[in-house]
Amino acid sequence: MAERKPRKDAARNREAVLAAADALFARRESPEDVTMADVAAAAGVGKGTLFRAFGDRPGLLRALYEARLEPVREAVESGPPPLGPTSPPRQRVSALLDAVLCFKLDNRSLALALEEGGTGSPYQAEHYERWHGLLQAALEQIPGLPDSDFTAHALLAATRADLVEHLAGQGAAPRADIRARLANFTARVLDSGPQPGPAAED
Image 1 (cartoon, rainbow, N blue to C red):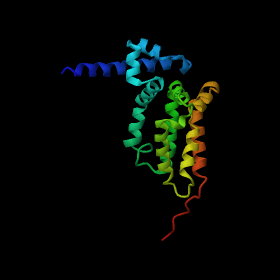
Image 2: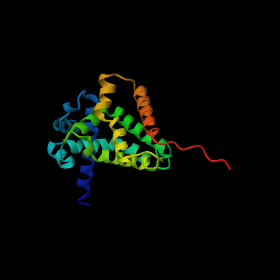
Image 3: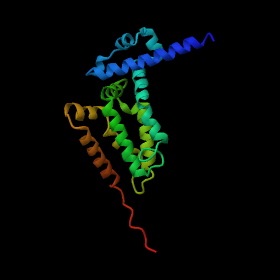
Image 4: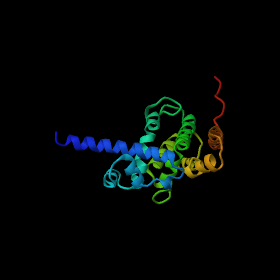
């Protein structure tokens, strides 16, 4: 029984920190304006508690990103078509990319902060590897489409947080327009390989 209270306190502190960070990133125009000190103060915890729970600022960003992404991950892992695992591969590729884009449109500051953190490369991030793996697996099921590994990288490049910010922020492009442009680009890429011929008649 003596250990239960610290565990409860840690879980409560973690939830408070994630909620505070979520609110701060939603309010601040630039992700760089949100500091660990800001988050600790908003959550009502000490900076030491924050660093023990998340390690550093990128660790906090990753935790918040994963918490927001959980509903999307559940839909991808066990949901119905077009996003779930039983979807036809062409539909699933388009749905996966649209899900990534919509998530980044909904979480522009957080996505930008995470992808610009650390090495400055999104390709080293765990979430990038997960999306790339899902896309590559679906692309490999499309007959005649070459180099699924590179194609997955190229398609994901169209959802980079800095590009999303450029289009939706500085460019003020409507959400529906950005989604339609990505869908059209994806369709052109998928249609670049040999197309299946008509079914043989009996």
